[in-house]
Length: 310
Image 1 (tube, rainbow, N blue to C red):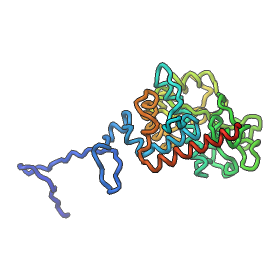
Image 2: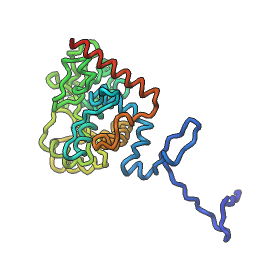
Image 3: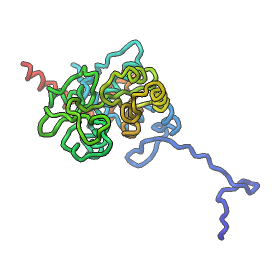
């Protein structure tokens, strides 16, 4: 056996332990990490994520969702971006409402971009037990998203309290994906449309548990627990609501998509700063070329709308 000697020793010959702090940061074009753009990994995972850092990584995607999917960003007369997020007395409430709609857009995008993701989300939406390639013929859409209003107006229903996401047949949009009959994995219940209700919260006991206990929804509820309390909520529901099946009626958003969960956690601080007025939409994207192209596109779309109205 070959004996190795620790590379770093103190004056007494004892191994030195080097303290290394892990950080989250963005490399510049030269591959250099700058301390001004870094946040400790512990703070990133457990606290509010640095807004500037989030904007560098996810800012443009957030701006696109707020603008094209939710209709919450526009260009004012001075050529500056403005948001139309309604601010409630408690800004946190406004943020959660917006994040819920963002979650809807993220899930739909994930399903539209990946056949495997579409099969997985669709399986849970129809209360199935196994992945089925037949889901490839169905497309996920958000009932309250602007894109649905534009492409599938008959399926748009911003006030839908039962289904945030549904699946429509690619060849016949009238035909919707249906739920499986409970207790029968081989037959389809043609009377109940499949779908998902989505909630995002730091406090599931206040905002998820009551709705589940009252059996408010006829479709599965996907809960993104930004504070990591899904197990606590699930245990309470399991104890008090014997008719509800965990992972079928109530599903962890983090379990279904870790990526969506992480993006929602990142967006929280950015949307909160927008609501509080600490951040302007113009500050979200710092790439001037990309930002100018984005504003031009928004302005052209607004002009097109005005022409249609006239």
